[in-house]
Length: 81
Image 1 (tube, helix red, strand yellow):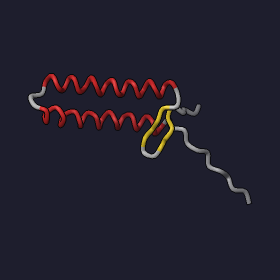
Image 2 (tube, one colour; image 1 turned 90 degrees about the vertical axis):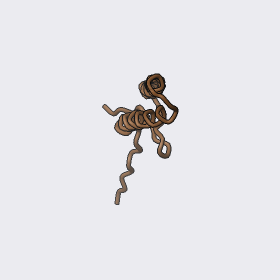
Image 3 (cartoon, one colour; image 1 turned 135 degrees about the horizontal axis):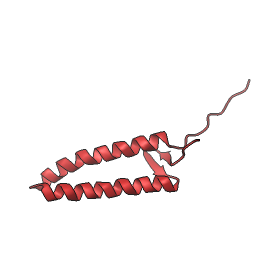
């Protein structure tokens, strides 16, 4: 079974199915939750941003890995001689 949840536009993966949209919404919601949690425990703006950027990179990495393995790839054309 071929999974096609995302398609690639440049360096960005866009969802093309309902599962892809759900994954994107979960990633964004988790990023917001992480920011709020870090902001509660930090003492300065720079402390918040430094800790949030690392978590945002991890969330982006997981999203990109899921999208890479479930993207819609073009079918290579077979050239007959």
